[in-house]
Amino acid sequence: MTPMSSEANGPPTVGVVGAGLAGLAAAFRLRSRGVDVRVFEAGRRAGGMVRSHGEGGFLAEAGPHSLSRPDEAVRALFSEAGLDDRRIVPDPERSARFIVRDGRLIALPSRPSGILSTPLLSLGARMRLLAEPLRARTRSSSEDEGEDESVADLLRRRGMGQEIVDRFLDPFVAGVYAGDPERLSARHAFPLLSELEREHGSLIRGLLARSWRGRAKRQEEPGSAPPIFSFRDGMEEIPRALARALSGRIHLETAVTGLTPDGDSGWRLHGAHGALDRFDRILLALPAHRVTALELPGEAAAALPPLSRVSHPPIVLLTLGFPRASGQHPMNGFGMLVPRIEGAEVLGALFPSTLFAGRAPEGHLSVATFVGGTRQPELTSLPDEALESLVRGELERLLGIRQEPVFRHLARWERSIPQANVGYGEVKAAAGQLERTLAGVYIAGSWRDGVSVGDALGSGLAAAERALESDRSGSV
Ligand SMILES: Cc1cc2nc3c(=O)[nH]c(=O)nc-3n(C[C@H](O)[C@H](O)[C@H](O)COP(=O)(O)OP(=O)(O)OC[C@H]3O[C@@H](n4cnc5c(N)ncnc54)[C@H](O)[C@@H]3O)c2cc1C
Image (tube, rainbow, N blue to C red; front, top):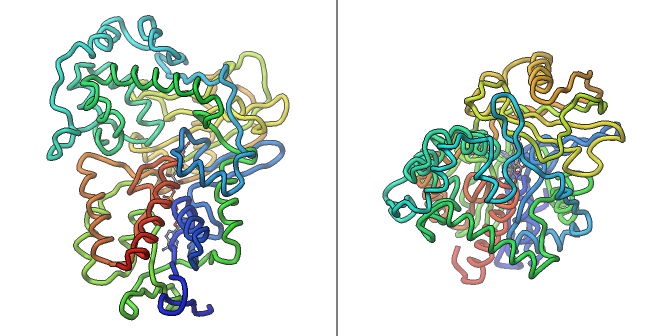
């Protein structure tokens, strides 16, 4: 590999480790500011958890299916990467979200007033929801920095009761984290809830205020980003567009094994076959468990134990394509979530062919089913055929799909979404400590700044800005 220019005789050089969304966004931003950047990726392709697979008119996603409400910095990144015209949005008439109750799909109310009559909850639970704004303000997790609580504890503390935790919160948490509401931290996994409680003294009052504000904003700015979207050829259009702009600067199948100081302020990356290049700055955009696997200078050791405790439950995502037939549920929505209390063997399923155009050929539909997570990790080690038969059993029971699949795509994630469990503040603090200890090394990734696609991209952009800032201030 050709040696790169160093700070003394040209623009700074930055080595980015990991070509998932965080690493690619960081490298794209650094490149657009004239930085000499190289990306090292262990895998054969860029994109990390984002992979789209098209075949015979079907399009399956191995990871994320959509993204929602990215912030301004991420929207600007999409524009610069030429992605605005590639965006596709769901038909608002067909974007209901279903939750399973007693083996039946029930649409979540689309308006707050629908809560009064939803068959998803008993009359008692609905009354508890309505009474929440009237409850006195209690200690809020976000006000008391010393305390952390699970998101289930937060809802119970607000008087919502176990039925709301079991029937509403649990499936929602399974849909976002494949995680456990009794363990996920309210403050770190659902910062919005903590913020609503802090600002409004009530979760329901806060949610209503937010929904009215959002509606008013959309009316004022009809052209603003849609709430949920994907891209014509799938989510992989994001890493493809970013990687195109970094052409010749991404080194695939080049796992980094460690870094050592080089000179006064630089770093040398190492790979399985010896030393790689020297860089003025390093940006690590790896999962937490990969950061702890790196050989790092001794002074980093104190920050690593919290990172090694981040858990990533396994998930299997099986997408099946079927001919449309009578007797099937119309699947006129985003997908269905299954509460643990239902005793099913799936966490839920998305309906990609309802949601976005171009996901299944004419006369066909596709269903992407999630299995495993913290709820049933053992199911993910079943062989392919057993998994398919388990999923088909549940699709028949819940959606009336009896046909033989004509398309199948299986994605296995041994370590999926990082769980921001109670006590996660330690992990975030450790990321900051690593950056302070290893001067000139920056950390990005979904485990640090949030698990959504928008969060991961934003995390990369923010880390790139920190690296640029240190350059301007002359400190590393
Ligand atoms: C099944 C599933 C469904 C999801 N659904 C959604 C969704 O619908 N909406 C949403 O917003 N989000 C969703 N997410 C979350 C979102 O996809 C991720 O949070 C995001 O893609 C993570 O990006 P990242 O760059 O932080 O990490 P990663 O994608 O994990 O990227 C890290 C990269 O580092 C590389 N790497 C690892 N070790 C080394 C090494 N030693 N040297 C060099 N490279 C290395 C890896 O190969 C990988 O490419 C989903 C995730 C999963 C798994």
